[in-house]
Image (cartoon, rainbow, N blue to C red):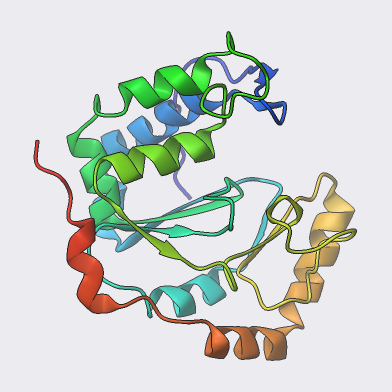
Length: 216
């Protein structure tokens, strides 16, 4: 385990339509640290997971073996990428690293709380920033809605998190007991996972060229 400081404050305000954490600047520093350290270049994929997310790495490895090459990121929600788990290919992170200023306008919109609360084009969190930024620089989005994340905010369940579903990650868990209860349940739900991964559609590999990083 290697850790690296990102510098700056971790304090955030809440804002926007959903009263979400205005955390884009924090995660811009996180991704800057990822680029600076450079370990992402040694691996095919980079994963960001929230601490309140139960994440099963072996399942993600199985899923990634099916993914197309090139600059891609995995979308985990019908409403767009959600932050509990973010998965980027090496080429996707490299594309982001090559154009550090390309998403400055998106960053400004994300942190702008001067607009009415129902204005979804301003005051949003890091996951929407990352989605818009990766789209803007030409990184290909691959939908993995069936198997990547179990998340109430994506309309996938109501009440308790479905930890026995065939998913890679489950969110959210705000106390230790519920986190490990879910971890245990997810680890005995192998049949559900096998059914889910077998039924999940594969992204066309021939279309990977669409995700080629933009020049400059």
